[in-house]
Image (cartoon, rainbow, N blue to C red; front, top):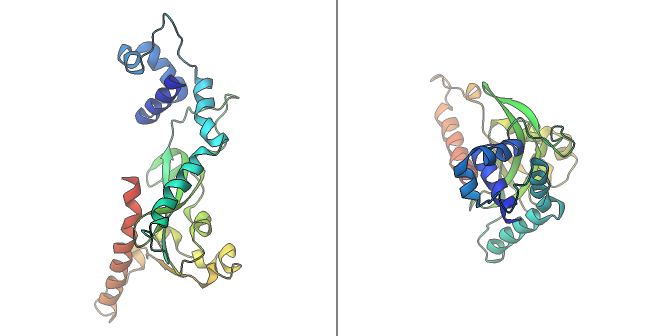
Length: 228
């Protein structure tokens, strides 16, 4: 189990697939030394073993329990303010060769285009306390699932305002929001797209619009801190 854990950690750090890390151990003396593997008395776990080890915490819901424990401690100490949530999503990139036990691609992973680049993997959707920057809710989907789809699952029962980037525009019109008494009453303070900002000096409210968007950004920036 010790070597399995080191394998998985090393694979994630260097973006190697399970097959890639297995090959690297045989090909690289430095890798073998780092993992403290002696081929005279043991063999390196194969790619299937690494896959099974990686899914163990998920199978026993360990990661969820760890997250809940970490989250509840500052909450119990009164360090989380409540009342406002920042929603966001980030892609967790995985090697495109990542396979499951049946030698097929993981069904939880998918390809998605972001800008001019393609990514393969999953997406983490996070709800962050707007006042303190503590992450209070996390969900996971395939990378091609749009950010807005999971927004409703990131909002707490005592939230009265929600902040998000322009990817969440129109969230208040979605069925899961409109059909929920609490979610439909929340004030959604979503950033405008740059093209939506009226910059002409003939528009009397141009400075006011800039101030509003600046205030949204100053609050929303906290959501980036957990991913640094």
